[in-house]
Image 1 (tube, rainbow, N blue to C red):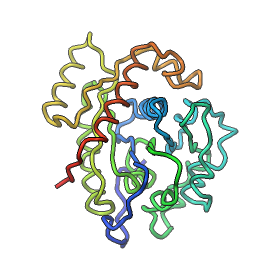
Image 2: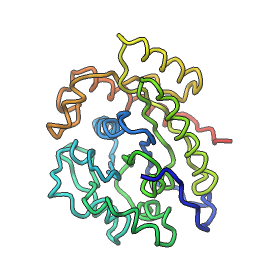
Image 3: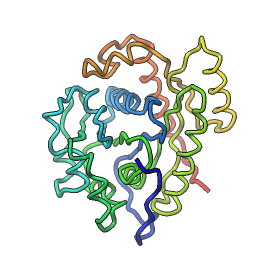
Image 4: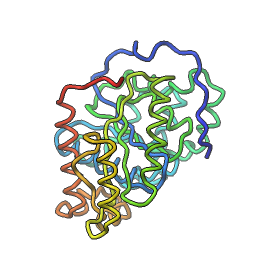
Length: 280
């Protein structure tokens, strides 16, 4: 997977984009294995449980978010590939998950070749933003991005207002976050002036491990209030839930992992109500 960012094509000023009745948040980190998909599934579920109509878009060709919500691979036709490269309205591609107020646009098998097909298309970086322009139903749209920086991730960042970055509480994690911060700034300058850091969420936190405490302290020392107060613990129930096709909130609501995602959703909603300060 290439880490080189495609050069921007000529486009209208990003700041001229009309206001939307929903908020798009890309869940991204160029480093894999940081809890990105787990956060996408469970945060989306927690927001829906709080009464917020939420759409989760699985933009990772691995399709783990679709698996984690119990959708078999044979039932994933007309998903995020069709959203990027087809003409189907986004509303028609969203399907119910069995969780009230939560819908999913899954990652079908063809998504693996989408980047090659996107390369030759006009306005290739804006395909997702334009596909979502007529979306009506949700309050929140969460996008589970693939690891690395490619045209799929770039489409998500161009479509989004905010980027939520899961930060694994392990060695070298802060190096990975510096990459995504540079990417956010690049996208802001070249494609999407409204993009900002939604926040950083600490994942796989182990209070028995001094390293977790050190990583958390370093992150809070550098990023300050941009790091969410809620931390996601290392919890076996979180790891088990995807194999049952369920978010951890349904698999074991009383587990520390499930309760952490409920708190994270509440903290996000509180922050959404606070006045926004535009990036410099």
